[in-house]
Image 1 (cartoon, rainbow, N blue to C red):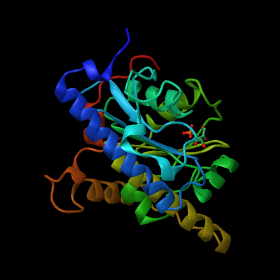
Image 2 (spheres, protein in one colour; image 1 turned 180 degrees about the vertical axis):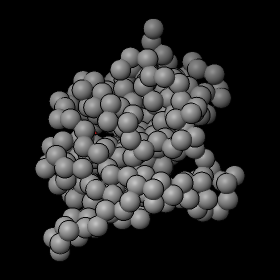
Image 3 (cartoon, rainbow, N blue to C red; image 1 turned 180 degrees about the horizontal axis):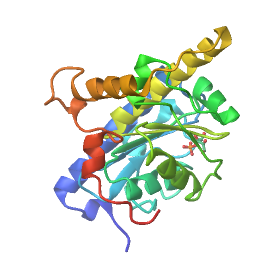
Image 4 (cartoon, protein in one colour; image 1 turned 90 degrees about the vertical axis):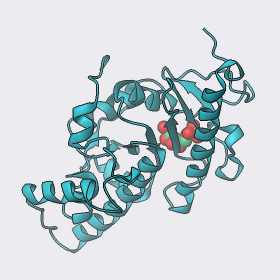
Length: 259
Ligand SMILES: O=C(CO)[C@@H](O)[C@H](O)COP(=O)(O)O
């Protein structure tokens, strides 16, 4: 059945418009944080309460992106009639993002970059060991490597889900490709992409100087618990809501159906 945005309920159209604005704005964070060059990388966000998500169009310059150009897709990765030109195709990673949304109901945002240091670890197929308190805080352990996967079908999404399902990390280094991150919303996933690159760079520098010292598992647990549950401006703020990967989110997440 063809879904036509203009024919959806007014509140759904409003939710789509707000998501388009957020996703468009967040794309500016990728070049601003030096995570991408040219048109590489992409951000998406689930439309709250709907089986829809918003993602950038493929191969369009970051300078030209605007809310009106953000493409609206079903969770199968099919573009709906969203008011953009039929010729405006969604990101080449749309199938991967869609797979994550279908299989990880707690995830509200997905980001992919080719940030230099994280991608260098991915090129070696090596996980980033947890040797920084920032990694314990943000990722709750090492940042894992996902399998080599072909672009365009479910392979990347399957690799992301299979890897992150067994990890507290919200970042995965897809081998020979680059980092994909997840979050409770797109902003949260962008933050994970920024943090992933930062720790990839620092741990790389550390390995050039000698052998980094691993942080004991029980201390990683306590760092993760404090940062996820106590850090910041109070337990009621949205920044301290259950994160994908945290115990709270795992407890509430439905079982993946198709993996
Ligand atoms: O690595 C890839 C393809 O997986 C992408 O990051 C491209 O670099 C950007 O693709 P579009 O989102 O513009 O299609």
